[in-house]
Amino acid sequence: KLLRALPAKRWLGLVADREFIGAEWFRFLRRHGIRRAIRIRQTDMLDDMNGKEWFEHVQHGHFHETSEKVFVFGELMRVVATRSPTGDLVIIATDFSARKTWKLYKQRWSIECTFSSFKKRGFDLERTGMTERSRLQRLFGLVTLAWMFCLRLGVWLSQTWPIPVLKHGRRAVSLVRHGAQHLVDALRWKPEQFMAVLEVLIQAFCPPGAAESEVVTY
Image 1 (tube, rainbow, N blue to C red):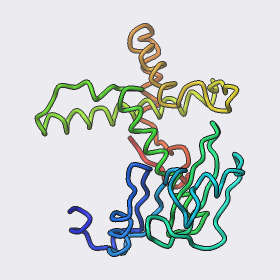
Image 2: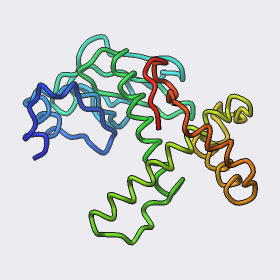
Image 3: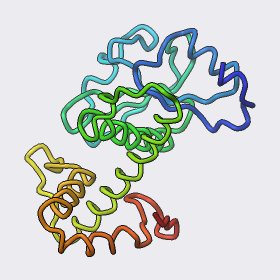
Image 4: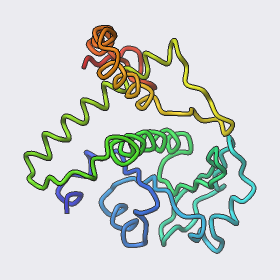
């Protein structure tokens, strides 16, 4: 209903994970002029073969694209694929070019990581017993500010105390958790360091991956 209420020209495209697939859904997006970049399962059919058969030889760090459009849930689409650092096959049915698709999906993944740190792996928002809308809005606002503080601090700390990289190639902890640990220590055990932390939090902040000219102050 929300998608129907918004003019199609306001949408550059929709990026989604494997929970949002199906012939009716793909057809609905096309009819409303919404371009798609949606991850599909390796068991989903692309023409007459499934995704795993199409891309079983793809290695991590390499990107493959079907030579021409194929039918995905009844829709003719480009399909691109790669492997994650853990070996998972990532297949995306798309209306964009391969380069644009990976750029968009990378942005979606950063949002996914943010949601994850809001939930059990971080602030554990799901445990709240609140149901009243206005209270939930205030809670989300406070948690968002706390998340940004932790990210800001984590970025600053990583410049002098880099996070160790494990064997699988990923950091031992996220930038947000790195900052959160230091912030908790300063608040609970090292109050003399809190003023230094506060100085960092009130400085202009260029988030990781943003252009240096796009400075946001928090």
